[in-house]
Length: 372
Image: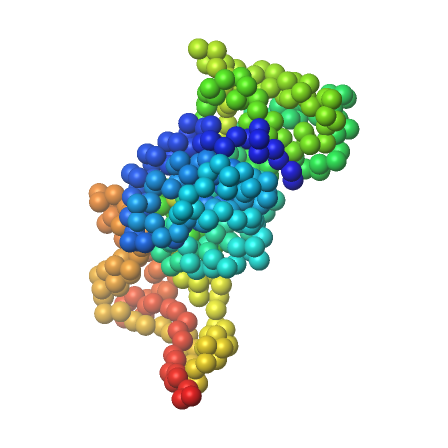
């Protein structure tokens, strides 16, 4: 993929819903108040305008802000036009683990704006985000699932004048748009990975652009077909794409062009431990602690069935360690606690005398640091 950073521009991404998410929604969710010194990663930073103007101000207690993009030309422009002592730009792809592995378990907050729709495998991207976050870390993600841009691109492909250029790019419509993915699809995906969903909202967005030129340039910049169109036909292609999008999106009362889309706004944390999500067993920890340099004196993996003294004690203990509970409105917490208790009873059952049983797999470990 070879997009045009000059057409893309170096200012804030031109969508009102993005500004609302970053400047209003995230502060209301107290997104940046968990750590005294934040280590932040902006995945898919483009030319850095949104990173510099909207992401950076979110974090008054900032240690580092890493900003990555898969396209070297985007990073080049970001370093020139949106440099800042606290921002470190680099070429990396959130979908490709080897390129981001160096930040594993180091990131306190991850932000990704209008990036994940580009991924061929969104689940792989979300898994990598999970691996990058420290325990308790959060991710704020905003991306379109449906867009008139893709519909306009399809109309252009139906025109014999442009069809041959499409053959060179392969699949150009995002999986989310093609398969009509909605918020429930992503909700299930991120929960399976192990995230806690702090906030999830599917928004029908009508974003008015500042001018026809800004509208045309932005969507031309992210059109993967345009680089394959001959130079002497590029302007004609851009104009026809613009006209198709105007047909689909229309104009505001003041005549400005409108982009219509469906957008996911997502704020996540992690509530399932790595050991549960990835089904770690004794041999995994044995290898890990040996690599660290410990001598193992005792290691035992045991299936446990612990009987609690009462339902109240059982419910209170697991409610006390449930990281989701604090995000439940006060008037619904008791209902949440009761339903969590009922789910655990379904899974663990009760003893012969009717007391609740908690079932788990536990590791017993005694280790010694070698003398050297």
